[in-house]
Image: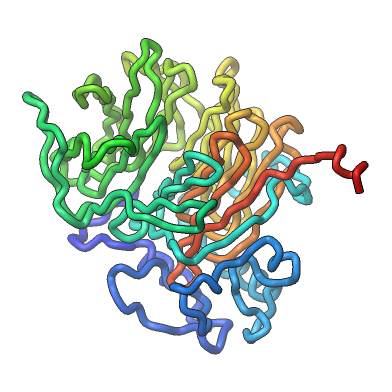
Length: 450
């Protein structure tokens, strides 16, 4: 992945996207300086709301009555929403280096019917704001139930209760972090001021990776941190992704992908490093198959690898992408793998016939930086770096889709484990927020009562 040799890497996405947007701002009251290093991505919008007040929230009822779901007061702007969308689509520059022409790539992509509505807007709050520290890494939001979601906000992992409409700090990584239990023989060490680059939560375990190769593990039902350390001393050590999987024999395992071209596997009983696998390029993402037997390995290569989770030996090379990959997700059936790339596409692979992808899905503006399946396998969501989240009906062969259209950098997406909710983290200085969507159910029996 892109390397940064800067001692102060906070919110690198600010500087990166400042270069991309036109200085001729479409709104008369847009330009506003950053007031601290804890601000998230600069906004293209300004309003006179105070984001600490509940009135900045937007409910489904308000949205149905015409309020913008993000609370953007378009009636006070110089541009209409449609005009600004048109301008964004024209001006947005994707970070890419394609190995062949886009015209050829476009011919491969499925023609998707985008008018579906699988998930309805439910609520948006600006009381919690996602923040991003690297423009290529967007796995910074996780849902553990339809009422509970966790996100990175500055140096804190925050919990948001969609039921109580209340936030709480779960982990502060600016302060010194000391493991709760010292385990003899392990390289556990205290950390401080960690810049979280990626995170994952599963089965009551929170795992976060940092810019200097840090790994932090916390059991949600226990005080303090169970384990923390730098997994590598390499100068280019950023932890690009973490995954939590169930070992075929039982206990949970943590898998990390680092810029030092290694994938590491840790147990969660002693937090010992069980395996490390070396590759020829920086590993940007790794995900474990549902049965725990396979690893998807993606990075600074056009090829994506399928490897044996025990030995790290490459089983298949997946060829088709034109640039570097940063996202992957397994269908719950364990047979389908989705990979997201800077070439603005998501490719779908049947690992029983991996010679070529069976479908190619395209975004509107930028790279595919996050992918998630629902636990029942019915839907797949993919997020671009900004403005668009796409939801596909897998049963239709991915040709029926819903497009969530908004404004702002996307820090992460997550379906709730019961599939009933979809959360989207928006990183923006003014309109940074958490968007919540609820799965639409066709309860035809209710119609007969009316």
